[in-house]
Length: 97
Image 1 (cartoon, rainbow, N blue to C red):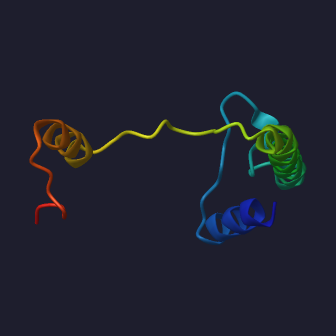
Image 2 (image 1 turned 180 degrees about the vertical axis):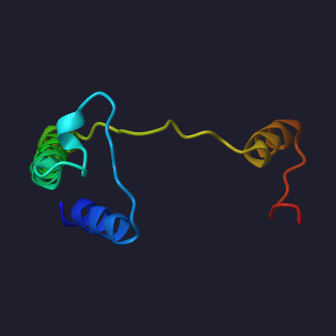
């Protein structure tokens, strides 16, 4: 919330007027614009925290079950080359440089 107000104050100090085309009540040219922007930015910040909390609460049971999350592991070409070489009988001890 403070970041939004700081940005607005910095822009206002430089003479920039913020005008929202679809929501004129948020424009900084009016008397209530900064107040409404502060209220909306607070709600946005609170919602972001709620989303983070819900995601963490949702991940806790899946972690307890041992479910793997995220991008699947993709083997490197070197790994597959080693498998082929093992099957052919010519295994390398260290990766090529």
